[in-house]
Length: 101
Image 1 (cartoon, rainbow, N blue to C red):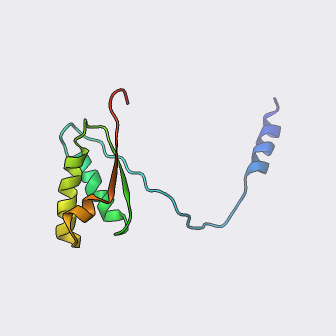
Image 2: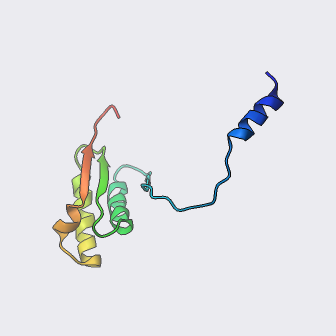
Image 3: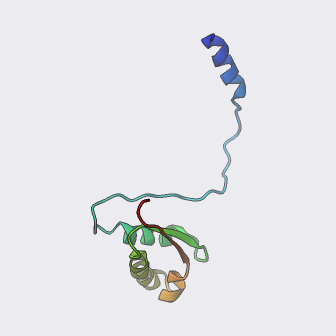
């Protein structure tokens, strides 16, 4: 294998294009000790960065404790942004997963 030929092949596959905004999903991960508030923080952050009518996907790997975090975040969002607690809570769609992940 000739490395120069391989580099040239690689270069021909590259394209330069203008920087443009594209719609994409935001993915955020939180790390911490057990009981440190990762799920609640994730729910609060999701409500803060999602448009008011946007839906939020929430993966619950905490043995069905995700709804507790969502309930706390929905209560805070109702106080901060208005609307009912139920409105903010209903924006979440939960996927429950269990061991082995």
